[in-house]
Length: 185
Image (cartoon, one colour):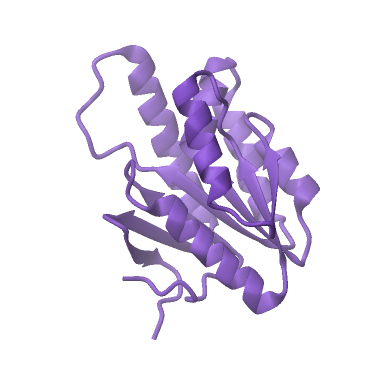
């Protein structure tokens, strides 16, 4: 299992399946990094509550964070939000990129252009960033065009983000493994 205090450079991508523990892992890493550096914590939320079940999920996530966290909502303009909230003394946690892709699809946004913007924003950050996403490419091929478009967009986004960031962690069953970047001793 990956140590929470393990160095990750300036950027970390945390991937995992649904309910794998990826958000909990990312939050613990962000809090440890902020504590070590005396940094501010910014939670960048991409979720939109279109129904009661999603409202409950959002409330549970908020309850998991203490008063150290500033929450900013960025369902579409993620790159611009990162640039606005950036600072050398900041650790940002983006949760999650697959919800962001869903939002872009629903808004009929140019996903490739938004991905380019996000990759550029990550490269230009002064502070640290942790990005969370659901791994969606290990299942069966979806049976409808929209689901295939989502899976393909998420997979391409994941490749771009993984190539850009300093470190990548994969979380399964609450256990994190470092796939890219510095490993704990």
